[in-house]
Image (cartoon, rainbow, N blue to C red):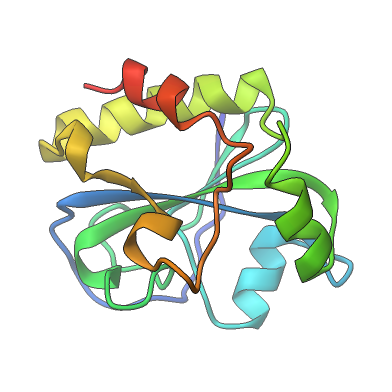
Length: 154
């Protein structure tokens, strides 16, 4: 797993994470890479998982990132990137299909297990964005194999 450090100044203070939240977002939005888009709209995540499986680290895990309304001060956010550029509707359509590459699952599993071990986060506290904000958020979508991830977690 290759980790690229590209720290974002967008976020809050110090946290002690007790939850890991899995998100998805388009790789390209408004002609910008996801990391630049987040910066522009003053949001952040701790990690982005690129289509090729590379991991971009945007925030230190003990720092607050702005990725999940009402859950930012006790969680680590991982965004798995959906290949290509999307409108919001095409993104919602795409995450209902089998969109995740094997390299992304491999990196997500390794990263998640490392975070779980370091912060003593249980499997039950690894959740989807849609689990904590149902009706408003739909990611990572039905095309994300949640059972596959869950069977590999600690």
